[in-house]
Picture (cartoon, one colour):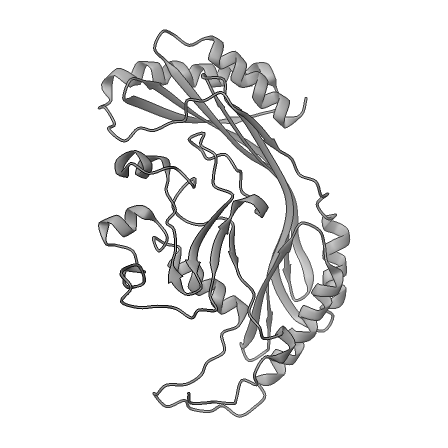
Length: 348
């Protein structure tokens, strides 16, 4: 039985045993993944992970109790374990306070989104990656495989999502401790792109042979590599695009929202769920918006609204939580192979 069919059968069995006034919501997360650790351009550790975790939420009125269960390969045993967890929630529910912002989707929609690409074979791809890195002290973690997510409710809603991808978080080191870092990912293995990345790494490592220069305090035109941009955007994602953070005044982008500050008109950031790897159905059963423009040509755009914030502020749900998971930045105009030389300091 496939992971999807297993989940759907389990959901049907649990929903049949509900009492009067009870609502049940089920969320499944799982993966079948290969992991490879690399150092000095050699494989040091390799393994495979297969796991399924079921989250149960039992609701009666405005009260909710939740539990999680790790699933195995035996369907009968899984139904028994989940049933025992459900019985525990039923006993706990009357003891809990009411939640004024409890907000689950009550529809009976069915939506499925399956993977269309085959994940790259870890053995073949990692071997090719190491060949291209010959002579480099390459350190990193490779991960590839299939990710699963399922949602089911006692209202009849059923959703299934699977995605296949790979990622390689890597760095190349010099004997003196200097290093360059990168992150590559995709749905299919791109050998030419990886070879180009290793050539750039060799070139960047040679830059450390140039004499060091002390940079005096001042205003300079600065080039930020893609890895640096990723780190900055990741920091902003901690509340920067959250409607709750903006409504409570804790967002790091409050000046942007108020119009007191602006970003470059070349910058556009979009939460692009339609083309990302994250599930289209949130953990509370709502359909995520295909696209949410967070920064529109340097100006503040829309906010990400979770189910609880939607109930509190009277807004439509457009995201699972209030941090982006499928972020896309519009491309700039400068080709990658025309990066400015690092030693050149230019005042604006």
